[in-house]
Amino acid sequence: MLRRPAAAFTAATSLALALPLLLGGALVAPAAAGAPADARTRATAQIAMTSWSSYADFKAGKRAGLKLGRGQVSMLSPRPRTVAGKRYEAGTWTSPWATPGFGATALVPTWEATTPGRSMIRVEVRARGADGRTGSWDTMADWATTDRPVARTTYSGQPDDLGRVSTDTWYAVSTITSWQVRVTLLRPKGSSLGVSLERVGAVASADASAPRPTSVPGPGVGTVLDVPAYSQMVHTGHYPQWGGGGEAWCSPTSTAMVLGYYGLSPTPTGIAAGHADAVVDHTAKMVYDHGYRGTGNWAFNTAYAATLVGGDSYVTRMRDLREAEDYIAAGVPLIVSIAFGRNQLTGAPISASNGHLLVVVGFDAQGNVVVNDPAGATNSQVRRTYDRAQFERLWIGASGATAYVIRNS
Image (cartoon, rainbow, N blue to C red; front, side, top):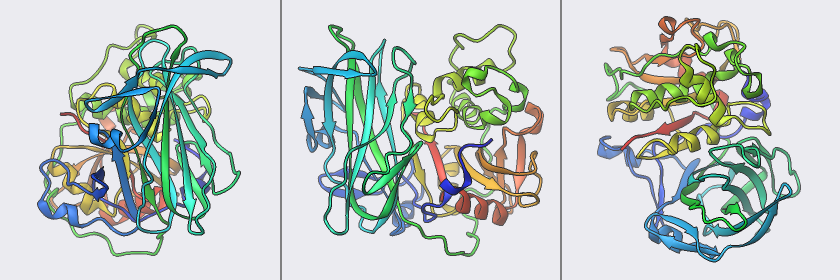
């Protein structure tokens, strides 16, 4: 699946384990639920994830037209706003400045929000350089669970000052020392729809592409999670308005597999009768990015999953497969982004890809990676085992070891 041009995969390759939370002004990196205690000590200096989700977190930011709730912000006294020619009522929450502690070169923001009816949210980021200069707000996305009345979209480009947007990632021109995120809640004028923001954050990372030794197998060895297998290829030609299936649908197929692992397979809507694994078609519809014109937007996949799971859903970056093992040991499969050329990934069902998503479901007795690779021609050909060293190198080199963490409560 061609997620985006390969040149966009040049950001950070250093990794961290889990979702850090900004609590009381301190950056905390908790381990995955059930992970070993030492997991929280392995975050490197080249990645830092900050997230706001509690009452105290949201109180630390600035609100306009919104009220605080338990674990959310929602409308209180909204103000008029026009988006794409449509009139809305709007309220805005702006985060405190997040300081990663190193010169970051990329940000990947993610969020969890409730957008009933024709409500939506707008997500923006800005950064501050080492010279103290503050950049302008850059719009990352207009997002909702539906495409009405404004299509779910991202805004690539905006190379105006300190950085630029590339689909789901904000890239710095140079290094940045801190960043903010701003989320605007919008609902049609005169409505009382309960649009709300439950969590927002971003993973900041720096370029650190030096080769490193293959990680040593750890607690995930011998554990393989029972994740259902779906092939993206059986959907070839489906719904051109959502990417056309086949090679274009690795991300929604992977997302559907992980949701299915948690028993979350919503009844497909708007899908013609007779489609095999119609939940994959449905997921593609729900994550399609009209700006990018594809279903591989990292944040759109986790934002959709967040509307179904009772736990967390976000994008992060990790240091190596040893850190991924902590999630597997805790019962959490990971969707990861790789790229590879001809003969670079032994046993792959496709010869090459400059952007492919698949599910890490476990590790064999030798520490090699067991995956559900949606590029398998049929569902029975999805389960694969890849060499640990090959896979880790491709994951780190392609996407900075990017992973979707979708965790049900």
